Image (cartoon, rainbow, N blue to C red; front, side, top):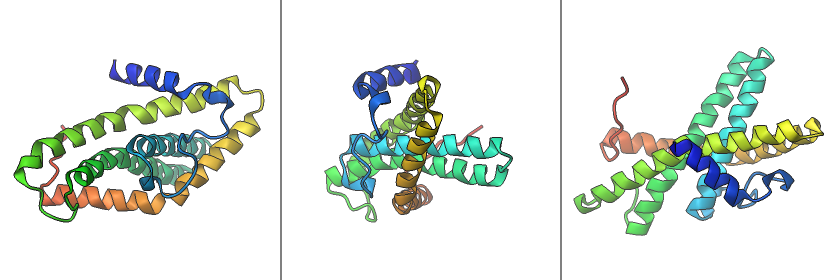
Amino acid sequence: MIKQLTLIVFLISSGNAFAETSWFRGGTTAPFLKQSLIIETDSWATCAAVLNVVADRLRAQGKDNLGKFYGNAANGAELSIAIAHVLNFLQNAGIDQNGDIPPEYAKGLARAWNVGKMAMEGLPDAKRTLIMAELEVSDNPDKWLEKVMDAFNVCLANVDTQHMYVDVWREMVSSGTLVVPETQ
């Protein structure tokens, strides 16, 4: 239900997304972290979707390892959505991400992480649906592929920021600042 609601809200807010020359709401500047939280998370969702589309196409061509590589990069873009929420909370609270987090901020940090996880789980799927729907209605698949590759290049231009976010997540989890539930 949440994924369906996310998709509906996303499509309404996107306007006529098929007419756009880019799937990035905030333009294609790098790095994404210099933009608002909403635009930044939307950009990471776009990257997760585009990287998954590229990964799927590579796997379909028998390039399994390269497909897996870009699939992993898509996972990093998804995680960047959640970390953007966490870092936004820390910045707004005036807390250095490398410093100790006062106990009174624990609930706020947990809330930021939970909201980020929810966005991480819904936004990339909504973006991917938009991207693939555009292909379905396209009378020029080559133009669609060009748009995919343009977005892919924007994502690659932001890979250093993505790596930094993944490293921040690893440090926060290993220090116990963020508690990630165990999977069964």
